[in-house]
Amino acid sequence: MSEFRKDPVTGRWVIIATDRAKRPSDFVRDKVEIRGSGFCPFCYNNESKTPPEIIAYRSGGSAPNTPGWTLRVVPNKFPALQIEGSLNRQGEGLYDKMEGIGAHEVIIETPDHSKTMATLSPREIEDVLWAFRDRIVDLKKDRRFKYILIFKNHGEAAGASLEHTHSQLIALPVVPKRVLEEIEGSKEYYRFKDRCIFCDIIQQETDSGVRMIAENGSFVAVAPFAPRFPFELWILPKAHQSAFEESKTHEYADLATMTKDMLMRLDQVLERPAYNYVIHTSPLRESSNDYYHWHMEVMPKLTKVAGFEWGTGFYINPTPPEESAKFLREAAVAVTAH
Ligand SMILES: [Zn+2]
Ligand SMILES: [Zn+2]
Ligand SMILES: [Zn+2]
Image 1 (tube, rainbow, N blue to C red):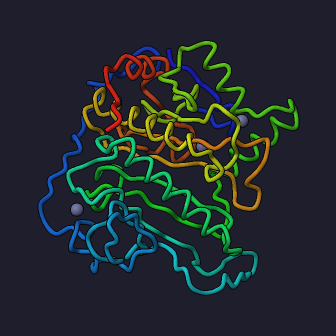
Image 2 (image 1 turned 90 degrees about the vertical axis):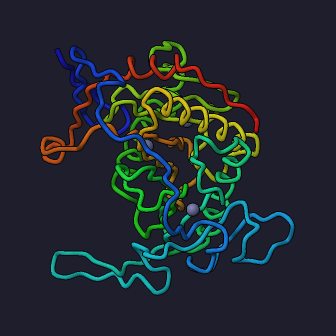
């Protein structure tokens, strides 16, 4: 038997195969290996090969765009969107269009080419999270932007074109549809119950435990009830918070530990899979609210999206989240401070 499940936030249906459930070893794919061969624009001494840095974390007073940094944020050399100009909203008959204005930045997480996010120290990951926050706070001042998405492509199969570990940020003049679906679903639930749906999900998952993966002082990691992809997991702050950039200092530290912990578990259980993560936070002009709850979604790249998914928006997931949560929960990893 298989089962239809509905995501309580977006209303999106998925099909979960409960009988021929795929175990980690059933997924055939390439491990992500860091080869380190060839020229890399994100390594030391190649700073001039990226556009000039927007911010960098440096110790010891080294000059901008020279070695000595521990983290660097630069504009994407091949941006999907341009920062300069006005939106120039226009109609073309019944169609709408505007200029491709936006910010597209790259967060180079470490100078060390051999590292991945899973092998960075919690302290280094925390710096990456602070960089996300610093860039959001800065770009928020630009009234043209309505949404900032932070994401990572890890491994070629997940869309990474450079293997040196990095995340990306895109500031958009519109709120993306995926996010709108979550916002609208959350508002609807709030109107109805006067509670945040994500706070309720955290409560229920904590009580039942079947889809719970791990918990620390400020965060939980769960396999969602209706995941689109096998081994999909969400990391959520336990205390209600609608905007990522408004998190408290200790929360960035706890998120760093939780992120490392989850990526180490994925590496162990799925043998270094390609993956994507995204941070879903509130739109910039409604960032403090009671109905939306920011979170991080992590999606290992184990299956391909095919015709049925494209045609319906339903996803077929061959691993029930209760099983994936169990595999990840039982993985033996130890996150140390350094
Ligand atoms: Zn490199
Ligand atoms: Zn909440
Ligand atoms: Zn989301």
